[in-house]
Amino acid sequence: MSDTWKNRTAIITGAASGLGYALSQHLLDSGAKVALMDQNLDALEKAFHQNSQNAHLYGIDLTNPSDVQKAVDDFIKNVSKVDALVNCAGITGKTNLKSHEVDLEDFNRVMAVNVTGSFNAFKAVIPHMLEQDYGRVLHIASIAGKDGNAGMLAYSTSKAAVIGMTKVQGKEYAETGITVNAIAPAVIKTKLLEGMAPEQLKYMTDKIPMKRCGTLDEFVTMASFIISEKNSFSTGFTYDLSGGRALY
Image (cartoon, helix red, strand yellow):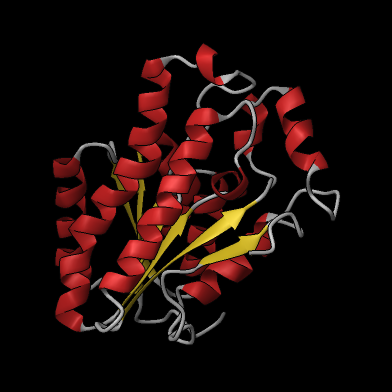
């Protein structure tokens, strides 16, 4: 077991599956106390029942700011501090549609989860990080937010907004001991892909120079470094995890 995260704490949204689950499990295995937030409490309980000592489970709607605030306050009451926040919660919405075919309700839902949810978690956590003059925030963006994926208007727009939010927050808190960064993955092998149209998935994968999906292990390696103490002079930056698709 690594000692890096002993006596450290983290909050991870979208923790029940995919990127959030993989990173949560890594931090728990490394000795961290972790607040695991997801709208699916049953999935959280199934995924983390063996980590009852350090895993704090919160089945909440991240688009509801009061629910998020209550969960964050409860976690800090139990563990006294929060060292890292990772916003992994996200949805793709309906895909393989041209912009004029996109349903407004679906568009708004994607924006609410991917952008407003991340903002709500950040706003609830940041005062506590400011009190301790230390914190690491990581927003999960997407290569779609840089390049724009045809057929994915809502998702691409939301992830571009996440990248913009990261740039602003990185600058605003640069002198506080808090860093705010993002990761822009290309296609990573998660269950999120199962609900995507095959044509859409092929379109995305074909754009990757390495001609393969990224792995959860590759994501965890990069994410765990970004939120570590060692990553102290990088903020407002969006890290590439795209197999060469984006080089900026």
